[in-house]
Image (cartoon, rainbow over all chains, first blue to last red):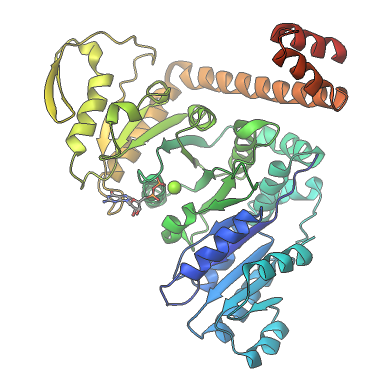
Amino acid sequence: MADRKIRILVAKPGLDGHDRGAKVVARALRDAGFEVIYTGIRQTPAMIAEAALQEDVDVVGLSILSGAHMTLCPKVVDLLRGQGQDDVTVLVGGIIPDEDVAPLQAAGVQGVFGPGTSTQDIIEFIRTAVI
Amino acid sequence: MPKSLPPSQLIPRLLAGDRLALSRAISRVEDGGDNARELLAGVFPHTGRGHLIGITGAPGTGKSTLVTGLVQAYRAAGLTVAVLAVDPTSPFTGGALLGDRVRMSKLSGDAGVFVRSMATRGSLGGLAGATADALLLLDAAGYERILIETVGVGQAEVEIAGTAHTTVVVEAPGLGDEVQAIKAGVLEIADIFVVNKADRPGVERTVGALELMLHMADGTPRQLFHHGQLLEVAAAPLEDESDGWQVQVFKTVAASGGGIPEVMAEIERHRLWLAENGRLAARERLRMARSVEQIVQAELLRRLRAALPADSLAELVEEVAARSLDPYAAAEQILDRMG
Ligand SMILES: Nc1nc2c(ncn2[C@@H]2O[C@H](COP(=O)(O)OP(=O)(O)O)[C@@H](O)[C@H]2O)c(=O)[nH]1
Ligand SMILES: [Mg+2]
């Protein structure tokens, strides 16, 4: 009678202080039945990896609007893997140009969601990525 | 580390201080089932060392901010600290949005601190059961002080706070009728009262209302602001159930750290007080009795549900609703079927 729940960390790395988008996604994920841990703004990659470890999440969702995704995302992935969190799925949402998608995926970011993505797309991605 | 590492491998790692193993073990006990039981059996002999501190109060009173300040104070004193922050699961979707970490960012980067958020889930063992299990794991992992943050509104949350060794009830000015806020069994479980947001107007009124309720035993009349009016209230003796512990009211400005050292000192004073004269042992026995009782209750209910044919409960309820059967007779029928 195991009652397993998918747990998702929603984090906002970098210096931009707008988290309205991240909060909208966090609420949508909660409404889809996930357990969402929200960490707030101005998180460093080290803070995110540590929170993911303590919370034992299945998914880390990063919201990045500052344009720093090419440096921040690989750092988070590397830290997670370095801690032995091998099976944690990493997603990023925000203003991501098309040409950055392939390099991000190559760096271990499984899901890249640019502007115009619906929260439903993200929910479905998570349901398929986490079994 | 794979998510599915068996308990036999998780237990030694957890006991050796591996934080990822601890984190994964907590998920297992939350999920329930045989793995959970094996884990708990494995760590149980290593528990009973950490001091459990419940922090409860209405939403927005500043509990998470206060917890952050207390953790920092304990770290400065050289003690390791774990935090279990409990938030409700949505009864409609089964999802939860756990936001207590937002206030706790300052605690990041310190290997002597472990913060875990927990949703209430409505699990079979009940909220109290799931948190008690997580607390055992944090205790076994060696954290010297374990803080449990719960929203003190529901009965279950109050119950959890009541199972801690030391329970701190947090109030804040301006949350409506202060006497209203301290109803619902909260007075009985508080070892320490904190009025946070002491930088806000109305703080003395909240402190006054609490002190009035607490010190009615000493026989002196008290003054109380009630709906803006100063009232003189004659004292009536309050029964002393706390075995001589004087519950006191502390003012804090958690946002800036004001008053936190005093609250920590009071928690430690309570801890030492408990350690005297076998009080701690008595409290532990009470906690264990409750814990065993809860498990038995949950397990009985589970077996009952498993033993009942799918629609039989609904059918009996129909009969009760139609007044052709009384509730006690219905319950008896159900229990009879269980054998
Ligand atoms: N003015 C004032 N605000 C505070 C104080 N402590 C916390 N807050 C604020 O109160 C709000 C709720 O705090 P939080 O710790 O999340 O409360 P919780 O819901 O009880 O955990 C936040 O905006 C805090 O910044 C305080 O001492 N004074
Ligand atoms: Mg809180």
